[in-house]
Amino acid sequence: MENLQPSARTTFSNLPPEKQEKIVDAAVREFARHGYKKASINTIVRDAGIAKGSLYQYFHNKEELFVFIFERFTLLVKKTVAEQGRSNAVRAREGESSGVGQEDDFFSQVGRVLLAGIEFIDRHPEYFQIYLRVLFEQDVPMREKLLAQVRLFSREYFGPLCEAGQKSGAIRRDVPLAVVIFILDATLDRFLQGYAQGALDRDLDLVQRNRAELLARIRMILQVLREGLADGGTGQKA
Amino acid sequence: MENLQPSARTTFSNLPPEKQEKIVDAAVREFARHGYKKASINTIVRDAGIAKGSLYQYFHNKEELFVFIFERFTLLVKKTVAEQGRSNAVRAREGESSGVGQEDDFFSQVGRVLLAGIEFIDRHPEYFQIYLRVLFEQDVPMREKLLAQVRLFSREYFGPLCEAGQKSGAIRRDVPLAVVIFILDATLDRFLQGYAQGALDRDLDLVQRNRAELLARIRMILQVLREGLADGGTGQKA
DNA sequence: CCATAATGTGACCAGGTGGTCATATTAGTG
DNA sequence: CACTAATATGACCACCTGGTCACATTATGG
Image (tube, rainbow over all chains, first blue to last red; front, side, top):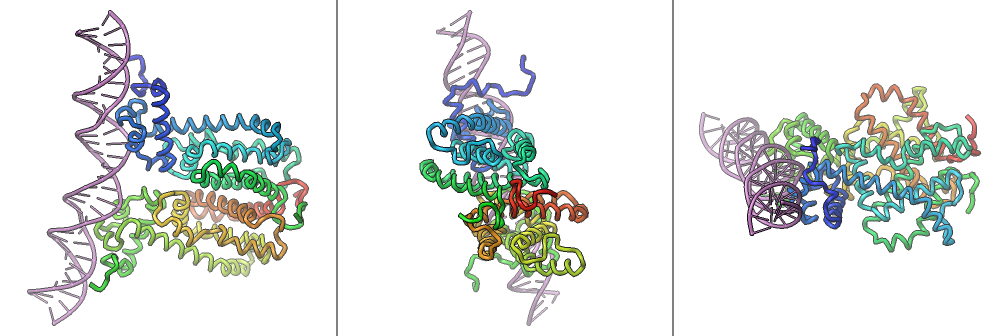
C-alpha cells in the first residue's frame, strides 16, 4: 500500500548477515565465472542454500541482483582508493618503500595508482573478474552506466592527472593529452588484467613472496613509459 | 564402412559455393555477435536458410563448426600479413607514403604491423570480433590451441622483432625483452581493439576519409613509444 | 493458544538450447 | 522409367534458462 515502486517484497538488507553473505558469495562467484548472461540463477540459489523463490523476494530479477553485486564492487573500489594513501604511508613508516617512489612527481603517482589496483585484485579477485567481464561482454544490462561508476584508469581518471602533469612540465607537451592517456591506460589496464588472471589461481602466499619482483617490473614499465623504448635515452646502460 | 573416424556424413566443401558462403556468413555473424557459447545454432541455420539437420551433416557439433570458422580467420590473417609488404610497396609507388616510414628501422616495422592490423579489421571486422571474443571468453572449446595459431602481437610475433631491435641497437638494452614486448603488445592490442569497436558501426567510407587522422595518431603513438612520455626528450617542442 | 501476517519453498511454466532421426526429397544410374 | 543411394528436412528430445505462485512454514502479538 505504502510502496508504489515495483520493489522486492522482502528487503535483502533485513536478512541475517550470514545469510546475506552466503547469497552474495554465491552470486559473486557465479558472475565472476560466467559473466552476466551465462550466469545461472539456479546455480546461485543452490550454492547459497536458499530456494529460488526466496531470491526473487529479495531481487525482482537477475538484472537487479547483478546491479546490486556490481554496486558492491564500486564501493570496494572506492574504499581501496581511499585507503591507498594511508597504506602507502604505513609501509613507508615501517621502512619498506612503496616501491615506486613516495614523491608527488607524475610517474610516482601513476605507479601508486597501479599498486592500488594490485592491492584490490589481491583482496577481491572475483570482483575484479566481474568488472572485466562487464568490460568485454556486450549485452550486460546497465553496462555503460555501471562502467561509468568506475572507469579504473580511463579518461575520467587519468584526464586530470595527465593535464596536471603537462602543466607542471612532467609530461611532454607536443603530444595530445588523448594520446598520453591512451598509452597509460592501455599499459596499466593490460598489466592488471594479466595480474588478475594469475591472482585467481595462485595462492596469496606466492603473490606476496613475489612482491619484490612485481615492484621491479612496475618500476621498469614506468621507466620505459618515461624515457621511451629507443636506445640513447637517459638510462642507456644498466 | 571406409571412414572409421567420427566425421560428418557430407563434406561441407562439396556443397555449392554460394551455399557454403551463406552458411559461413551466418555463422560468422552469429559468433561475432555472441561469442561461442551464447551463439545459437538455431539462429545460424535460420539465417543461412538451411535445416538444422543439414548443418549437422556438415559438422558434428557446434564446436566443430566454430573451429572451422576460426580456422578461416587464421587463414585470412596469414593472407593479410603476407600481402602487407606488397600493399605497402604499391602505396609507395602511387606516391602515398605508408604513413609510418618505409625504412627498415624498428619502429617503422612496428608501425607497419599496426597498419596491417587495421587493414585486416577494415576487410574482416566480424572475424576480428570473433578473435576478440575468444580472447576474453573463458570457456571456448579449443581456446588455447586456437589462440596459439594466431597470437597477433604477443611473444611469438614480437619476440624475434624486438630481439633484433635490441641487437641492432634500436632498442635500449637495459630493460628485459619481456617488458619491451609487454608494452608494445598492450599498446598495439588496445589500439586495434578500439579501432575494431568503431569499424563495426562506421561505414567504410568514413573510415577511409579519416585515414590521415589515423596515420597521424599512429605516428604519435610510435613517437611516444620511442622517446617516452617525459618532457625533455628529443622531440620536446612541436 | 489462536489468528494473522510475513516469509520460505520448490513444483511448475514458457521459451530456448544443442543435438537426433525417421521421413521426404533429390540425384545418379542402368 | 524405376531402383537405389545420397542428401535435406523439421518435428522431436532431454535439458536448461529466468521467472511465478499456490502452498507450507514461521513469527508476531493479542
